[in-house]
Each structure stands twice: as C-alpha cells, then as structure tokens.
Length: 106
Image (cartoon, helix red, strand yellow):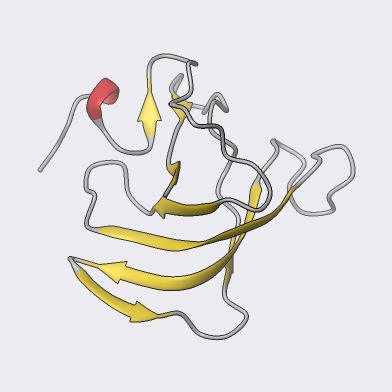
C-alpha cells in the first residue's frame, strides 16, 4: 500500500512533530519503512546523539534505541540481545525535502 507523504509513517511535508515528544527513557516504536506500519522495532531510547560529537552520525541527531521486539508483517519476535537501531530524530529534514517522523512513543 503506497501512501502520500503526509499520511505515511516515517516522512512528512511538515516539520511539525507528533506529540508526545520522544525523550531518553521513552518506550518507542520505530517504523522501518515509510509506506507500511507492518514493519517496526520496539524498544527504549537510551540516548540521542550529538552530530557535532558522534563519529558516525554527523549529518543529524539520531535516537539510540535498544530494541526489545522486532515486528515483521504483523508477527512479533524478541530482538537479539544487544540489538540497537539509530533512526534520525523526528523533524529532521531529508534529502528528498521531507521531514522524518518514524519514531512514536508507546
């Protein structure tokens, strides 16, 4: 199922970020793809990177999420111990002129 930029799960034409705000300590869902809500990871935000100081993520700030659950096409399974993802912080402008919004507080 394809969606328009304003109603997809990870990108928007507006820099306005859905509330509540994602902060360190929040339990979140991070969507893997912009055109479906069937692929995502759940976990806890343990940090938010500083692009001026992070050796790998200099283009934008990113959430550091310790993953507890992987969800694929509606199926759920425990994540491997130590699994971490680094999605861009919601509201980050992408190279396609859209804003990220792929991480939601549960």
